[in-house]
Length: 100
Image 1: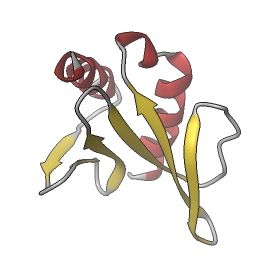
Image 2: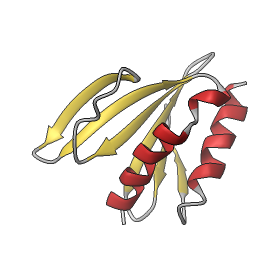
Image 3: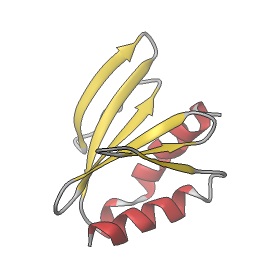
């Protein structure tokens, strides 16, 4: 099930433009000119780390970290196909646009 959710997410991301999947030892980095998101797999879900230039105020964000003056890393738990919705894709579109 997790693979189907990941595949759906990447299919949506490809509508934004070029996406480079960069497998690492414990994660997959998603990049355009630079990284805009990261996927950390678990048994029944994955953590999606979204880079942004502002704090996202949503109960879906399970962890936020300000890594510089204008950069935040924010984590969302993704478990079901329904989790890949317009709200999530909006956050990812903004992150993608920052990575150009």
